[in-house]
Length: 531
Image (cartoon, rainbow, N blue to C red; front, side):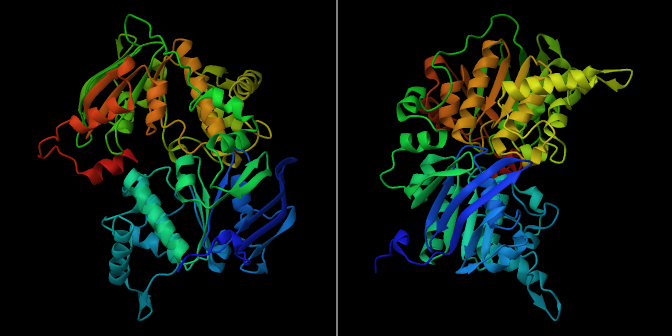
């Protein structure tokens, strides 16, 4: 029997009517209307700062709206907290995995609803059921291990499995694929199709347009806290969707192209490389990795998840201890490698996981930006507040950081603006080399374009940039050269006209598999460390 079109159903599992929310006088939401039908996948999109996260938090009880009403399952509801929303059947999967990293995988999956026998937790049954559940999601791991030992992709699948298991009537997925491999994305889509068959509704938040067209029935576009469009995904051109998000005409979007990188390649400066790494080896992770970055050049670092991209950057700055290998900055060796020594030498790194390794959530934008430069602003232990304010104001304006002011907590900003705060922190130091690990992961097309344009600008000013990205288009259009990794080894280097998708795929597929041995890491180990 044909499935009924969800948009024609009279019932609504979730209705948001006229919702508004402000913070310190700044409007985050203005009269937002949103509805979700049983069995539909409804995309919620917009630039960072458009109000998506605020709307999700209002719907799930993190925030109480200033105006408007919310109906869930036919009743008017104002949830007091996310746990209350979850108990009612509204589950949320966040972009940054919101589970307990020190607890076992099984404990996380059944937290708060552990199976019991004779009044105590039935650990054996919980572990067995957890392993069976995760196997259905393509995750086969030791469920007795701490959650933090898994890669981000596997952790995300655990969060998904937990949300779906709690008899949800609607599931909100906030950037669910940001840490997933292609095969894991397809597994997620299979789960979503099964939810549709069970008439469970899905709110799908993503910046990846391919995913929206592959899985979503309808779309709601937010801009500056207001709904600017709600309608069917089918028949909506991609350029039109982007123009709705950005508030620009379709012709203006068409002229900009798919990325914001300049079509002309950057021109690397000749002479001594800004950074040279030779023979970096880390047990079970990296094997004799070498690369050079010249001033004025963007060097791409490509490879599949688990290839050793993040490990390479961390080994360069000393955040990951290498068994062998050397690093030189502008021809001078870094003899004792540590993040502090790298910063002093002029090498800084923007990490992939901004929540865990980047921002300090309870500090202000001002404090997060100026953190690294404070030693340079102090005399006799006293920091010049005037100079600090001058630097913060300069970089907030230069990077167009959207905040109510420099004293707003950084955790209250959108993901794209948090990313800009982290960039500002390191640019304050005027570094020679900038290592960027997935700099546009989980941010919208507008913020993504701004970051890409900034990378161009920095390279143009003579900075050496290492660009690590899972987005092949970003690597192809943004890098002068691309070093390709597989299983912790360099398997190819592309340059100039050779930097193409076909060239990258050839480098990965033609590389021989390393011989098995004590130094050979398993695919699972690689995934863990890449995360």
